[in-house]
Image (cartoon, rainbow, N blue to C red; front, side):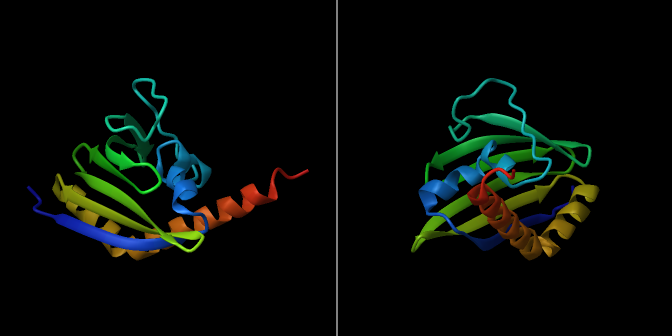
Length: 152
């Protein structure tokens, strides 16, 4: 076994109050700001933030299975995620009010499942601050575009 385990925590700001920002961090809501984000649901779900909801994503030829572990709408959501042969763990998103904005804390707790997974996880850990900065920029750009409405 690889023995590699990482707990990565960082923060970003979202120009919406927590109740409005929360949907940006759900399976369907991430489509608003993540290019090529296309979650698939093996069973129909009305509320993609409901605990027990399962969805899958495909990235770089790898399927990751996600499960909503718990959620408090407008405040926090936590996922379990497994990419077979690569890594497994949890992702939590906590939103705190900061005036009319949200301070968002994102924590990945991942364990590598192989030597290759350990190398991938090391690269992810090394780039984590830039990863979250890219989230913040992508969300801000999506919100600006939505505020401007459809172009003529």
